[in-house]
Length: 212
Image 1 (cartoon, rainbow, N blue to C red):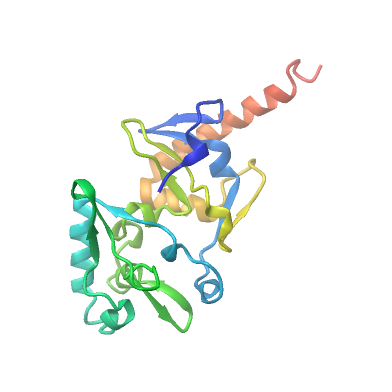
Image 2 (cartoon, helix red, strand yellow):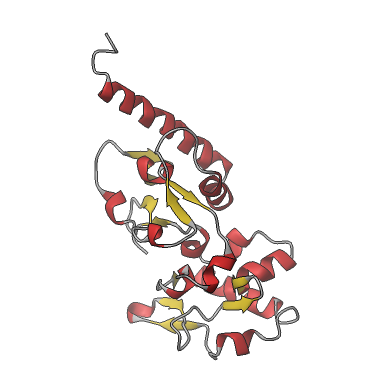
């Protein structure tokens, strides 16, 4: 996953913790995951190539084993024997089936579901901490590099669960939850402070003479 336009160096980019953050992008998106929409429209588990770290790989294997008693039909749902594919340089990614869908996605009467997310809820674990980060933070994205950028996935608005909103006021509740659960309350507080600073910059730009 890539951040794309969010990596450009301009006044929208603020340093928050270990990240360069595209404030306007994060404030300009609303997200609400509705599995029933995946029955008829494009869904995120059919589009992206999700790379996983060794730590995430181990976690996924553990979750799959832990969930066998709950979801015995996983293999028939996934229609694939392997959960991972190894690419160049020993980099692993989640495998896909013949429909190009993540092998850990399965259909229920409510729509398309994530196996890892479902198992985490059954075990009373935080699903944001049991899935690969790329999945947990979607529709947000983090770039690679020593100083990673946090922004919005470029293709996010082609999915029914995301919509554009004015980049002002409070963060969208769905985006706020993703950030809190993935990066923690302290980072969220720092991000909100950066949001206030960005809005002050915008007001100053629109009223260079202070409204006089």
